Image (cartoon, rainbow, N blue to C red; front, side, top):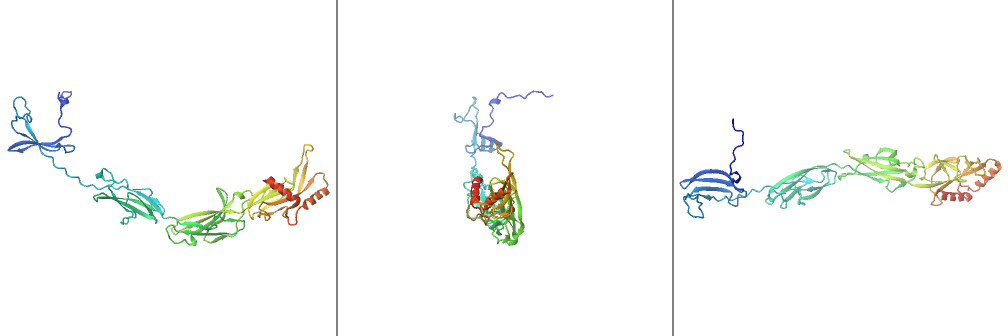
Length: 435
């Protein structure tokens, strides 16, 4: 069996140096020299500039006695002379082509689509990666015809037509060597652009007004205007942000008319209600786009008053204590009623007493329950007032006294239903009370 121990190590190992850090022997061979032989050594070095790369010859030259060239071992033996062959002249490296690198900030969109191209990361390997000596040639359409209007490493181009394009950049170095790369640009077909001409965005309407619907459809890529069959109109009534009622179902055509604008759902929500007109245009490829405009109603301020004040009125199905100020759409028609009612007139001195009030007349001359149309006031710029006159029938008062009270109220109303005299004063007071 072989010994199980480490191999011996030379005591000179620590001082042993086979070759220098700057010279590497690659081959050793004997060859002819002056009728004899010499040892030829091939080496390589890091740079080859200091005699450390080339072919060296080691030959015997006989005894030498010059102290500059001889190293004696004390017994007169000669040493070997080392003659270095000159290193071959370096061969210039071949020019390497640059490397083209291309990016784009957007590669998918609709026309007109402006793309910013960037080739600044392109480099020349013969200039330590720096591309300052590079020249750039751009072909944005991929048709083989470079765009001579641009030449820098960072450029932009606008695509006005839909399609799939390959944008190319060719990078050249100072010796004419080049490299080319490309990037794909997808320009989707843009949908047509709808335009509402009527109603105008600043237009307003009253209930019953006709509403004309006129629009235009524009081809985003410069084609002819779209025909009327490409238009679809719809009218909605919005009385909450997320809720609406369809007033006109989607209707194909152009130059249409909604015969009569509707009224609001009720007086209470009229202030927060409007109409929305929508126009959708569709081209022959099926692409479509919708636009809309908000149509605001003309508003009328109303004031409802009772004589005496503080009684209950029913306005569009809602009971209010007079005086009450309301706002609704011009020409809005709704019901008003002055119901017979009993009002508590108890005091600290007299308890459990009440008074019955019976409607007698309206200032507009209509019935106790009737339709009221909200018109703007023709006499002033303030609110339009409607006054309800009541008979007062307290318990224990003879009917003749009640009739006298009724006659007194009637005498303050004009023949045309307008408010005058004491009632006008009551309206004035009521306006102040209603704010």
